Structure formats: C-alpha cells, structure tokens
Length: 74
Image 1 (tube, rainbow, N blue to C red):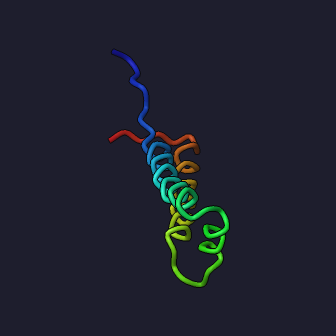
Image 2: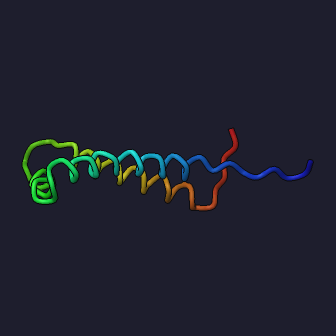
C-alpha cells in the first residue's frame, strides 16, 4: 500500500482554464481573421478576447500555485 501519489489539482485546473481560453480565440481567428481579432483586443469595449486574457492569467496563476511544490489531497 505505502505512499500514494499526491494529487495536484491546481495545475490540472490551470491547464483546463488555458484550454478553455484558447478555444474562443481560435474560433474568432478562423471566423474573423487576425486583423479583426487584434482590433477586438485593442477596442475599448469588453470583448471575449479580453475575457480570455483574464482567463489565461487565472490559469497561469493556478499552474504557478500547483508547481510551487505543495500537494493537496481532498
């Protein structure tokens, strides 16, 4: 029986957040093209690309938390 592997769900959730953020950006690149997507990033309106940027940040933060070396078991 011994030691069971530690579960690190922060890294898994961070990867999930990043995957979820990539999907709308790829979709918009395929539909609108890179010129319009860059306009969406720089417009003063709240767009899905800006929300995806925030989700990237959250995902990166979760990955950093997961890779700090602390393991959590639920």
